[in-house]
Amino acid sequence: MQNKRLRHTSLDETEEKVVRLLKSHQSEYISGERLSVSLGLTRAAVWKTVKRLRALGYKISSRPRSGYKLVQKTHLMLPWEISDGLRTEMIGSKIYYHDTIDSTQSHALKLALKPHENGSIVIAQRQTQGRGRNRRRWSSPEGGIWLSILLRPSFDITYVSLFPMLVSLAVSVAIEKRLSMAPRVKWPNDVTLSGKKVAGILVDASIESNKIEYLVVGIGINFKINPRRIIREIRGINNYGAASLLDRKSKVDPVNFLQYFLFELEQMYNSLVSGNAEWIKKEWEKRSSTIGRVVSISTPAGRISGKALGIDNDGALLVSKKGRTYRLLVGDVDHES
Image: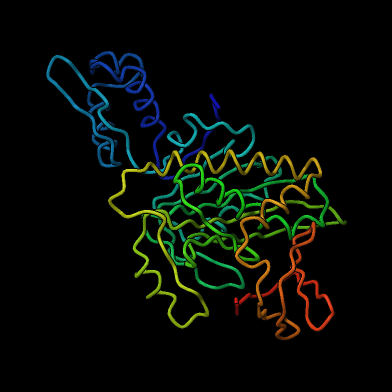
């Protein structure tokens, strides 16, 4: 999607302009004078901007009397890199970037107070106070994909509890198609690989007068992280381990993966807005590691053990125990067999 309106935090718009101009002449050098004239900058300002871009991970060659040439783009998920080639219509209409942030979810919730914000993304290289479900800490070191998305959906409020599953399905499809892996989804909101968590979903909802005012969905993906660090940080919390999708040395571009995930998410979101919950339910169940197994679920009313039969159209887990079917909307699941 072209010509996105972006707002950057901790970044200078001049950096974006220089990158875009260098990309448009990527096969050749562009003189400092031409950059200066095109952007309305002094030659000194151009040089300082190039230095900042190099610090952000761009490889930019410079030659006397020739100028500058972009050799390799950064691996950082900067707003203009995400928007360049993003195929969504609404998600990513604004992108707020931070090197380090306390929590993308907290900042996105503040954006939710502004009625014109819709589809906006808050993304960070690292979170210091990342949050998971039930106020658990979410470890968010560099190398992961940590973001929150603000949405103002028009679908029925009964779909709110299905929405985390929709997002985990979109993450799974992106992993399947871009990384050629076979992830599984674990009720209600986790994505796993070989039984270890590689992604988690958190949704904060505001509902007024039986209408959804907004959803803020937080997504944490262990893209290229050190899983031992995460396991060490969450020790003592009931969990089933963590894994990284890729090795830290992998050359796979996280921006490309993120763009694909956002596209899949928007397609599924539009499907839900159109009322097609049944398709999402079936696709989620096909990838589920929970359905068909004997599970034990910790709920606010106590612990229930039984066979997981499936989910209904609003995301509730259906569990059979001694001839009775329980319908569960919240809880932590342990797989027993």
